[in-house]
Length: 187
Image (cartoon, rainbow, N blue to C red; front, side, top):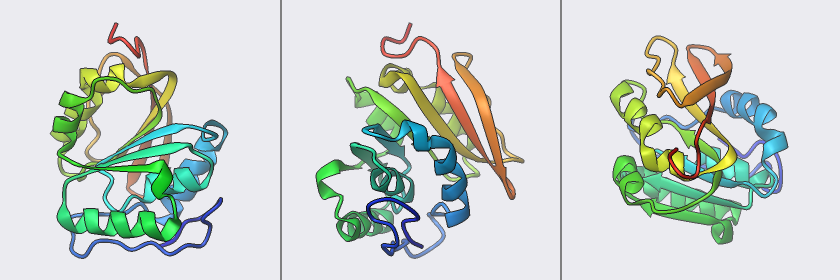
């Protein structure tokens, strides 16, 4: 696993041992970032269920200004810290050791431009709760993009205020690109 493009192109990334994390493959990141590239310059990124940090680190490598990584698994946090060090993005990265819903419960203000939501595939309820969380909605910049990585056979029910504007199919997975109405204030 490696960074595909940008400032840290070619740097090797580590993945946590075990099956608790499924880092985004090169193929997924190539497709995703081909779509997001115009929106990455100086973006503030939130990487929820960050795992080894492949999505947020790729965003930093391609020009994002800052990435907040939220992860609670010890092996994933270890890999994430090692990957932040290997890519030399420590100044632009914040690692939060927390349960994602708990993090969102405490989130007071932010203006994220891009949010990655990638919980374990089997946990559709966690995906739905995260996408519908009122503090996520309030933490988005006006033209923010939320990207959810899902198994096609387990699609989440999207909140009414989330508009699906693009889907990218890759194997058995879908990348759902969403924009939220009423961002920044929950209205």
